[in-house]
Amino acid sequence: MINQPRLDEIKRVLGSEKRVRVTELAQRFVVSEETIRRDLKYLEEQGVLRRVHGGAILPVPSEEQPLQIRSRIKPRAKVRIAQQASDLVEEGMALFLDTGTSTLALAQQLTSFSRLKVFTNSLDIAGLLTQQSDNAVTLVPGRVRRNDNALTGPHALAFARQFHYDIAFMGIGAVDAEHGFMDYEEPEALLRRVLTQHCRRSVILADAGKFGLRTFVNTLPFSAVNTLVTNAPPPPNFVESLEKAHVTILHPGVAADDAIRLSGL
Image (cartoon, rainbow, N blue to C red; front, side, top):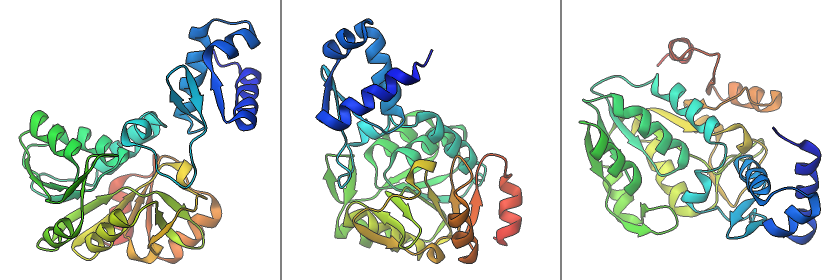
């Protein structure tokens, strides 16, 4: 059972000291170390902290965390997004999935298909779909980025430009009301700009925690994207801006068929 006062105090201590240790927190609250580990796991899933050996630290806002760490944040939200996004897919489609935890969750949903043509710059997505499905998988060339097993660089961009995809599914670092879709680094921003020009339908996957964040790179204006898939209705000011840019918003409670009909795609 969640003990909210204890969680709030852990967050206060972490904000003050930048790092907390399991043993010290267990002594402070007179609970077991296993209880504290569960608390830290819960807070990590909310994106509040990053677990490390023996405790936890504050994430650095200006830096994107490694894929292995990000995959532990809001896992249920990512599954809901992936399930919603998979409703847009039909057998025989050509898809591009770029690197990210939400697109990796989508890849897991796509293992139920068998006749897709999937292009990706993610070693993890390529491996998952190759091992767990009969879909045709093409891995984009490039330099491997160890932080997230992404293939990046000019070779990846040139290769992606050779094809036209039915749907390009893309993750994103942040969704800002003023600047639109934003990223932490330039390579993924460059690829996402290419993909929006080479697909019939461009789809951004973003959990609710991305709204209101502002990162380093201006990737795309809202108007460059057809569809946004998220796990909850966005804040009203974002809905207004997205609808003004003719972006279809898809989240649990909105049927994919209705979204396709409304978008005219």
